[in-house]
Length: 181
Image 1 (cartoon, rainbow, N blue to C red):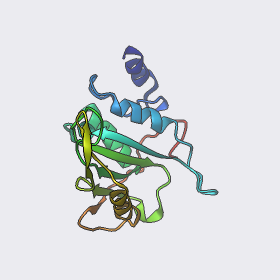
Image 2 (tube, rainbow, N blue to C red; image 1 turned 60 degrees about the horizontal axis):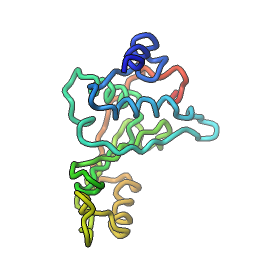
Image 3 (cartoon, one colour; image 1 turned 90 degrees about the vertical axis):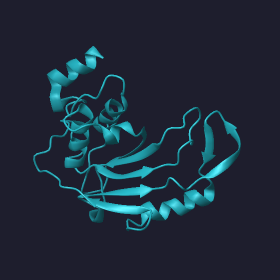
């Protein structure tokens, strides 16, 4: 962890961890910052860029203001990279009964999504497994998966989908490699 702290302190936003350091027992935001540093730069000419989907537990969404996690969330939102968060059913993964969320992070948001984050509640989109695997008791069946896609893909509010308007900042810092410039 010393090399991560050193990179944060010496390289700042020119490194991978300029936005901040999370608690030492939760490396999920370190991994996300690393992935953001690897994003292909956005190009208006050919509409290229990158999209990242990452499964998190609830902690990246709920840390206190001023914490490392809070500073990283703020950096992601100010740069308008957070496209959406999908709340998944619990007991979906082997040996864990915790709530999980898919974060979709991109530097190539569609025009109608700019300055907004879509929140999808898919916690009820599951079927019970015939036989449990540890704490894995639920699964996303094909019908639930097909049913969930329109909630995210249509980018419209519904009983399962809300659109949150964010404030983006022109002064937000991005990695020097320019993945989101």
